Length: 440
Image (tube, rainbow, N blue to C red; front, side, top):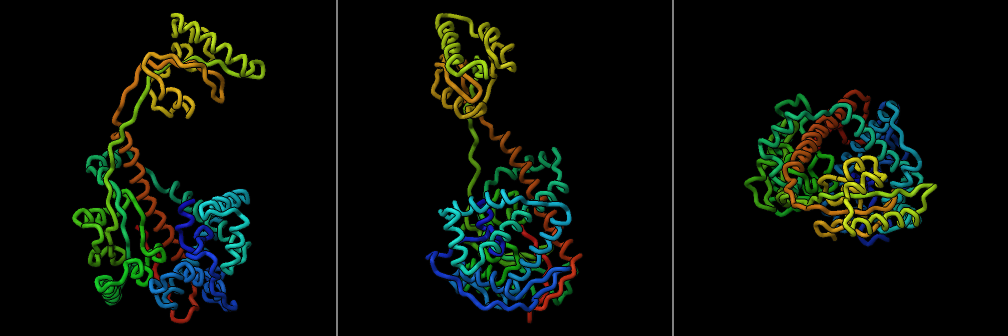
């Protein structure tokens, strides 16, 4: 649910209390004129005002970071349009979210704001928003997340060859980057004049930053990226989940540095390096052990199973053969025929209770009988070792990196598709419909 809080504030999950959390958001009399027509739906002025006011409330302690009201409204309006298009597409393709899932999301959201649900309701109302409306926006955000999962899963495949190539290039060893990001978008098929206008805007943004404007304030004011209203903060990401050009540029940058505008296929990018960290080696302890399990059932009580396990341990301590006793008495059908052999495994492979017991044992030691959810066990630790699992983990990381990069591209393409196919009429004075921006 962390992403819900960090998401754009028009989504329910974007709710977060402003600093000094008891200040009320400015309220205005709702105006019911239409500011955008989106297929068969509309965006009302009152809806736009609520969301724009909520953004303003988020930055109440630093209003200088916000752009002029008309610029803010255009950004908020585009987000509302995309949100409506995604919810409509989700509904038409059978994506559903249950009331129970919405309740759980609200519970998690309240907990992350150190509240209970009653306090969350009061805080929402204090900010001038109807709680039922807030709940609907939570549902919409969950629906959009589920739509994204469905689109990505149906379109993205990762091959072994792609993983091998990424590993060969050593990209997974780059570690993680924390970047600030500003996008000055250029529409598809842009004319030279449109490109020049965007270039000048990007240069102006860079000059403002060089002149002392906070990068986050510049992102809010200038950026067309989806995270503009979060100050352009991309958070910590594995380097290879980012566009390759970004990762390569930051190789030679120091923390705090800001790039000149970089021309890309969808516009001009300005990057600030906020932090770097490398991947540490992943060394884990593995154990080789045997066990005997006496299950508890409707016919065998816990006390009876414990007594049986204790009797087996006494035989083992007296010199009994573990392998033979496991074959005769263990009720773990997967390991009994192997003399109870569990093979090599990481400490938590069989649950927290087994991990707790085995981490306290010495090689050759036989445990006291202990209970898990399936019954009573006697465990013998045969050996332990440390193993560098970095290569295995890097392969998993590489697969995830390729998947995430493709997922970003595919969903951005999907958004452009539904945006271009939709009938959108902007009626907000002075506003035009920008191209759907690309999220890095």
